[in-house]
Length: 365
Image (cartoon, rainbow, N blue to C red; front, side, top):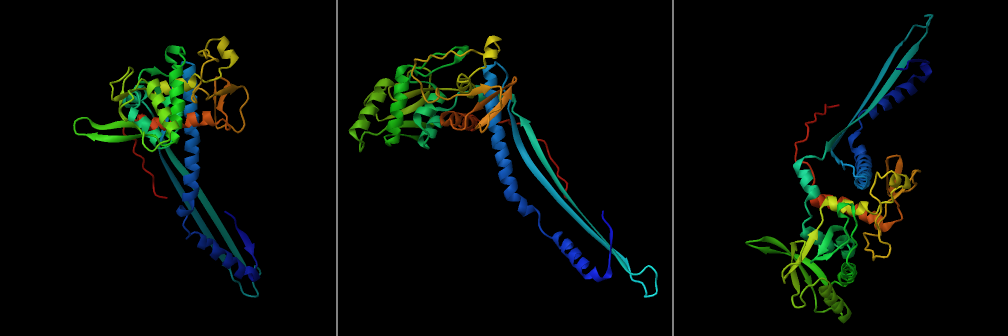
């Protein structure tokens, strides 16, 4: 609260200023905060989601428990209070004290965001972590434009019995050469528009995912690559479409058996690409690297999580764990894409909690 004496010849200027101050109290604060709040909060949530996902991937390499905390709600409450006071005395010409005017003003701005966090726990979350992804959802990503070689190398253990690289049980089994070759060809056939996926409705089975290979209106080179994919994946050369099924083993003649991974397996596969600090290898606090440098590598295998004592600058995502920094380089497109797809897979796995959120009462300001 500020009070000062003002000469009478400045009375008009003071009254004008006070009028402007009072007018500002009638402006709307809420609309001005929408653009700022929406983008700031969305950026903060996206960054924290990347860091949380990266941290849990790192923890899996150390046999530590992954923990996820979701931002359930954000409520921002703003209030602005303004006040002015004017008092004075107008005396006669013979009065000793003369004329004076006392003016004061105050403004109080309050920002009270209420953010609710919900730990992802319970049966639904556990089921989302360990249940394999629906093959239909995986191939929908291919239909929407994601590269076949990248998505399949990250999300499946095998295609029709042809095995991908696996990190089960803390050991690494390299991918079958046929698997790597089939993914490379699928990417080329996909780019040419000769490979696709659709959903067919069946009154008994319900919705069924179907993969089809086009042989009409495609160049002979692409048709030959499609035929080679069939040979590599042990698919018959006759049918143009194959029903997607979940199975670790080879399917029937008209089926493409997909042994899809769970979210836990996907995260473990990414964790195998972590550069474990030498000190942690010596004290055996993390799984050692079991890579085979001579083996063929899929796009997922070329992803990399770096580590070091110093905090990286300009990293796409970086977290601190056990006195070391772990990060994904901003210029490493393969690793950035892998981390982003892992986060996207969480939405497909539906790992959210079904528990009721706490009731929040925000008083009117």
